[in-house]
Amino acid sequence: MPEEKSRYKATIDGESYTIVGPKSQKHMQVVAETVDEQLAQLKEMTKGMSKEKRAVLLAINAVSDQLAMRKELEEIKEKIKDSENKQRD
Image 1 (cartoon, helix red, strand yellow):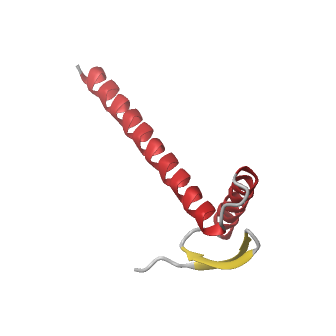
Image 2: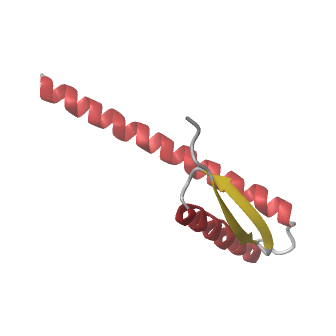
């Protein structure tokens, strides 16, 4: 059964976007606001850089954060697994 998708209209860096996905309206709002805030921060730090390059830089930062969190989650799962194995012994 396919997931229900909702639509959310957002303004990010002065441009209008329609975001479509299975997440809640609130989730999409928070995501859009976060992206807009981060792009505004990058704009201040990288004066003269094009919108496209700022967007790529933001994507690189987001993927880097995602990979770091994934690694941390795997380490936590491993510690839990080790702890459970020690309790059985």
